[in-house]
Length: 202
Image (tube, rainbow, N blue to C red; front, side, top):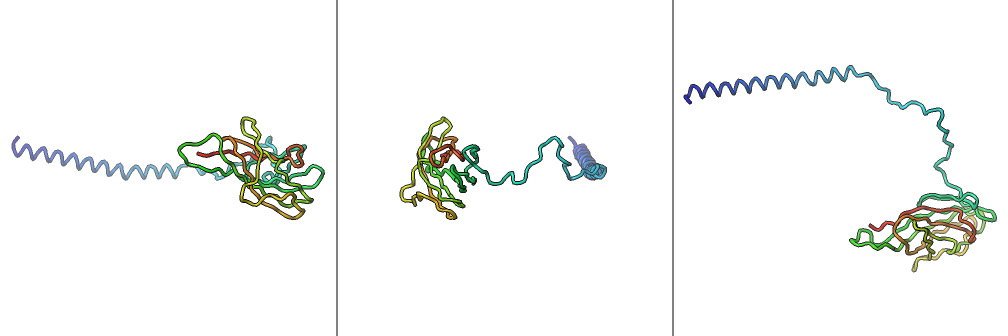
């Protein structure tokens, strides 16, 4: 290839590059303008969803309020929630259940049964409320019932809660990993409230 041919080829490549840059520059200018034109032409959308259909039931005030549990209408809620319990024989008391707390989370090998600890709080009693551990049980997803015990070394629950006072205590049992319910049947009668939970140790 002669020097003149090499020069001509280099000029041709340079001209093509300049041409491509010019086209790219034109496109870079025209595309934003075209998009701006499109965005300006778009109709304005109202930032509302409109009203609810008339056939839907109207939500009552206090839907997320405290549940009331009784022998005839037991409350079912989640751990961490409070239930106002209508006691058999009259009177009410509020009960809150949190937990369970389990040991050994994150270990490479997990047992099917683990130690579970709950915290219970009772307050706002309108009359003296007997507290018996035999009235509190847990139930796993297979229907197995577990008895609860006081936690060794921790404050034991009182035998009775007086009106206007409150108490907080921990209870413990060993139970199967999975879903469950903690249930209260004051006086050993029928269950008035249940708190659902999940035993997880992974």
